[in-house]
Length: 182
Image (cartoon, rainbow, N blue to C red):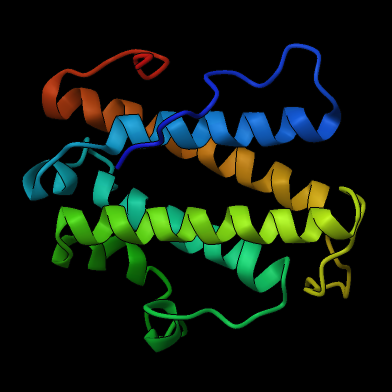
């Protein structure tokens, strides 16, 4: 699980779009660093009293990427493995089912989801800017803009990068704010 050639910071004086994209990529890079390079035991570890695991976080953020950028932004149905889950019967499926997946499967699932997300955002941006509304409608019948979806993902990654930071330190002592520059 690596994110090569990604910014370590959003641009200092970029446009709104450049800043949002840079911030999201930075959060993805931090998350990849905090969760990367571990075996199954490391990915299943938690930091009590929480039951969150790094593997669960990886699978959850793969789902979040697909939910927000495939389903909400593009209006497309989710593919495998999400389409085979009975979410009503098991709304936390991604969290606990991650223990059954190998590190390679988890890392690939997340990487493929982020690749789809980047493609989706690029396609939407080819048609206009951050103000574009998604076809998705919330419970109030409102459609979020691309801007709102981007902010939601930045927030989701920042929250879970903090969780990953604590869990990873408990696994092998890895600490720090930013991945090492290669």
